[in-house]
Each structure stands twice: as C-alpha cells, then as structure tokens.
Amino acid sequence: MSESEEKSEPSIGSESPGEQSAVVDATNGRKNAESDGVVEGGPSLENMQLVGDVWVYTDPETKVHYTHNGTDWVPYAAQAPDAGGQGAVMLEGGQWVHTDTVSGERRVFDDQTKTWIESAAAAAVDDDDDLDFQLQQEKLEKQRLMGADPSNSQRYTDPKDGMQYEWDSEKKAWFPCVDLDFIARYQASYGEYNPENVPGPSGSGTAKKEEKKVVMTAEEEAEKEKIAQMTPEQRKDYFKQQKKEKRRLAAEQEKKRGWVALEDTKNCNIYISGLPADTTDKELEELVQKCGVVQKDPRTNQPKLKLYRDEQGNVKGDARCCYVKFESVELALQILDGRDVRGNKLTVEQAQFEQKGDYDPSKKRKKLTAAQKKRWLERQEHAFDWKPEKPRGARPKSDSTVVLMNTFSLQEFAEDASRMLDTEAELRAECSKYGTVKKVVVYDNNPDGVSTATFDTPEMADDCVTMMNYRVFKGRQLRAQLWDGRTKYRVVETEEQKEERIAKWRSFLDEPTPSAGGE
Image (tube, rainbow, N blue to C red; front, side, top):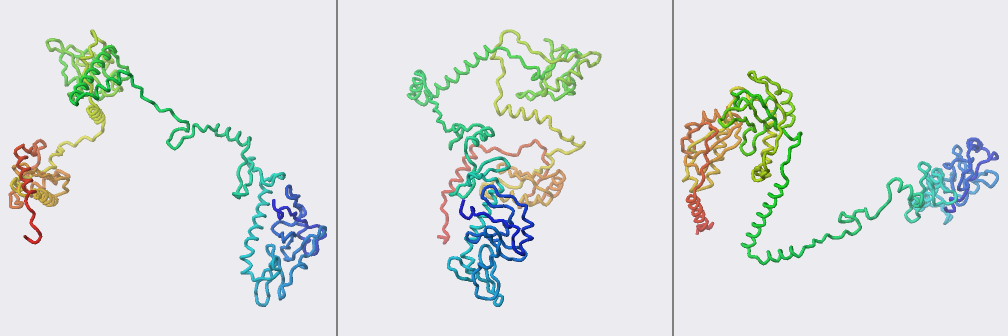
C-alpha cells in the first residue's frame, strides 16, 4: 500500500469551529475502518481532499476549508498561497485555485514551482496527479467493500462466494489465488484434470498412439510375389478364379447355415383356407386388398398372391398373400377370419414356413442389386401416397402435347446444323401465342420433319392444333395433331448415316477459312 493510502482521515470533533457544527452532527455515527486505520465518524470521503500529507475538509455549504491539528479542526485558508489579485483562493481536487473577479481568469497553484499558472496549462500537468488520486481512492473504497485482508494488502476475499483474489502489480489486475483449496474446489466442480485426454492439433490425445502395422504371413508374401510376376492376362484369369472360389466357399457356408425362420413381426404373409372352389385370382386380390396394400414381386412387378391348385388346375380352396406392412396382417386376422364367402367360412392365420427335405442354397433366388432394391422400395412407398382421384372424364397428360409435322427437311439440317436451333426458337415463339409452352423438341433425324410442343394444359394444346394445322411455316404446310401417348418419333441414326455425317463434318473443318480482306 502506498504512503497516501496509509494516511488516516481525521475526524471532526465537537470543537469544530462555526460552520462545521452541522457536518459534525451528521457524521458522529460513523464506525472505525478495519484495515487502513482511517477513523470513521468524520466527514465523508467526497468532502475530504489529500493535499500533500494533510487531509483537508471542505464544508459543502460554506466552501470553507479545515484541517485537523490533532485535537481540533482549524481553518485551512490561512495556509493558502497568496494569489496577488482580487478573488478568493479555493481548494479543488487537492489544488489551490484562484479566480480573478475582475478578469475572470482562472489560475492553479503549482506546488513544485511555487507559482501560479493558467488553468489550461495546469490541466495537462495535473491530469496524471488527479488520475492517481482517483485510482487511490477507488482502490481504498474497493478494498473496504470487498473485504480486504488486513494482513495482506495485495489480497481480498469476495463476500459473495468467498473466492480470494490476488493483485498482480505487473498486469494491474486481480486474479484468483491458486492454492490447494482452489484446486480442490475446481476438481469438485469439473473433475480431475488429465492432460492425456486433451486433444492435440491432429485431433488425438497427447499420448502417442502406436501405429498399426500390417504383418503379412509367409504365404501372403509368396502370393504377392507370384502376382507381381504375372502378365496382365494371367493376373486377370487369376483374380477371376479367386472370385469363383470365394463364391463357392460362400455357398458352402450358406448351406451349413441351413433354414432361417422369419420373426413374427417381420412375417407379412397370411394363409387363407375355406375359399369357394370357383374363386378366381381377381376375386382373391379384391378380397385381401380390403386390409392393406399387397406387396409386388420386384422382378415381375406382379402382386405376391398364390391361389393353390391341384394337378388338374382346380382350386384347392386355400391361398397365400404377402402384405407390405405387418399391420395389414393383424387387420386381416380381425376382418377376414370367419368371413362368409358364398356359404364358405374363411379361416385366416399368419403363414408359417417350414423346410421340406434338405436345404439347397442353389434354389434360393438371386439377391437384388442395390439399385433394384432401391427402386422396389420406392415403388412400395409410392403405393401409400395419397392422391386425389381424377374427375370422371379427365383428359390424359398426352393431350397437352402437340405433334407438328413437316417443320423441316433432313437436307436443310445437313447443309447447316445451326438451323435446328433456329427452327426450335421459331416454333416456341409461334406456339407461345396460344398458351404456356413447357418444352419444344425437334427430332432432327425424323424424315417427316416432326417436332413436338408441350403445353401447360390440354385446352392450350387444342388451340394450337386449331391454329397451326395446315398453316404455312417457313414455306411449308404444317400438319398438327395431339399426341396419342404411345408413338415414338425419335429415329436412331444408322452406322452409315453416322459415318456420312462425320465425313461431312471433317470436310467442313478442312475447308480453308476466307480472310477478312477477301484474299
């Protein structure tokens, strides 16, 4: 603690002269300070100033200065320096200030040079002193409020949580005191610190991990050498044989595994018995569809229904159905079981599969590829999509496409291929007069000069057919009609046509380009 902080603040006693009596009465109840020895019961700090080594009290009402001589408060004005002009000398911020009543000039007394200087010049000199004084007062007040440790002026305890802080003179800041108590509280709150668990720059712990080394056996090394010495063709045959061997081993393992029964929650098959002898496949499909969506075979895209028949083809009276969802099985057991169909009572139960004879994995159907399985699942989910039913008499989507014939000739495109783009742009511009055109396609290899224009609605296509049929377009009479939804107008180019087109293109590239000067 600095010397200025160790100075005690004298108190105002009952012997204070004249105007200070009101201040004395108002401050008699203050208590003594705990750490710096300042005697409480005197005036408040806001009315006290430290001038050098002397505490000076300023009466807030009369603006008269007093100092304590050890026993009584005496006026401090007698010790003020002579200003040599008219006006009173006042103490402001620990400095003597004189304001001339005639000129209004304000001067400040410099204790070092013992001279009066103008207030503007003194401001730059006294800023540092005022700042130091303010910081000292704030430090004293903070230590008093925060419960500073009297035995150590560089440490205080926060009364809110009991945390002790220590003053760092280099960084000019308070920091928590790291001691055994602090470490115990930290570990109780956040756990024990382990530097090995702290991730490093590479995202792993600081402890080095042993690199995994692939150890090859003598047989594997010999095989690797053997493959390296093979020619590309021998290597290809070798890998093909290895692939066959893996398939054979997998088939043997599958055969050893034997029959695997389905879980009840994954078994979506029902077995129906008691059907009439004249039941048809269509009638069976309509019956089971009352309880859910019937699964379709991913290869044939046919519903997985089986109506059992004898050797002569007569219906035996039982059938099997596979649903997409297990919930449909539960619903079928509730609705179809015990149902009367033309005097026959149906019996419905979850189908149970048992192995007959020895298990032969070769008879097992080949698994679907990833793409096939994805398409199959998408079709199943698509079956559950809700779509509003089309109104009766609704026109098909194909009625929105208009087929325009004789829009170009093959010879025209053969001479200049860029005319195809011009034809497409001109057709789009003409068809846009009758509605919103979504797409225009020019079939450049079609000998009939076919182009198509797809509209937003069938009504727009009807208007286009009405206005474009028999119309003259680029010197040609067009024929317009609606697309039937089945006819394909794209013509695949033959090998001869392809070679002829490539030859023409090469000859076009080999032609010399005329210069800009016409040489």
